[in-house]
Image (cartoon, rainbow, N blue to C red; front, side, top):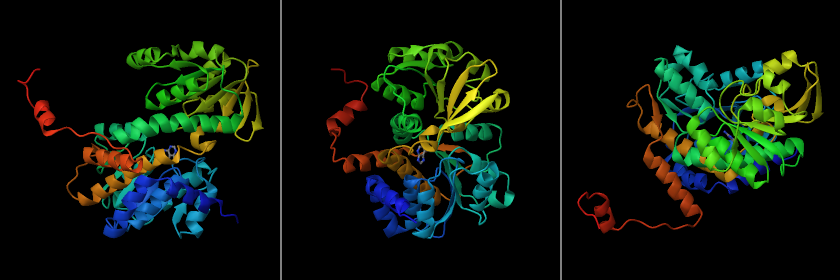
Length: 408
Ligand code: ADE
């Protein structure tokens, strides 16, 4: 077997300076000694380095994927063979394999869970014998946080969970610059199609949509944003984008990226009126943003036209192309977010997990924000890694900040 996975892990490790700094301390202090951590994350090189970081901090870690199509098999093999790691994942899992692999991460009841999208959280929540052992957990992504907040509202949240997605050092960078780059990486890898001059829809103008739209503009695409939020729609207009409804924009667009966290954003009826041979890709967590079910049931023919692209013929004769079955193309067809971006996100994850251990027994069954000091800590370590100095307020300025009488 080649050593691709080992080298990918090494490349990631060599470009994750924030994790490296945290590793120095974790190796000394072993904050996770005696702690079992179960994780459902996209199993690729950066995630591997994160999992190893937790083990280096003393944790007993079990890792599965949070998406049936996003694992990097070479990394899985290297984690198993070179690092003797408990990892249960492969690219192209069936639905059954996917859930059974997540299940394997909780064969020994974990103290902490780290989730991306909410499937592990749901599984643990349904089992009293697992719930009673949990100190707390982290959630990585927007979709998972939406599910957590719904659980909290319904009184169904059974243990403390931290919303890592909304930490500043996460969504400002991972959602925007990470998705902006990896969505284009996945698209280009899947299609080899030119973006310059194309009419491209970005569905959703949250941080992910903003990042994708910004990078498409840089590539010379004519970007149309679709939104349901009037404020975000105006933001898109003022950022210089065309704004339209999906059912209209799909008639004149060549490509769509969905980034909403909502189901059926591109409905089968939209596809019927789409520009011929439009290419559809999804950047959101679940594969329901593009109506894959409708497409599977109502299309009359399908042909795999490239490794990651399927062409569907619709009942009215129209054709559309779908990338990676509507699964998030950043990972299913690309390499995931850039290394330096995941370094920040996983640094937040690591420090928040450490916070959970330190606060064992003091946390409630709530969705907590990442403590501000962790956000600031990660930002400071990153600045240090980039060798960038910033100013500090003087004593006099601090006094001014707290005074309400001093004017000029
Ligand atoms: N690599 C590992 N986790 C990822 C995520 N949530 N998004 C993109 N790339 C990733």
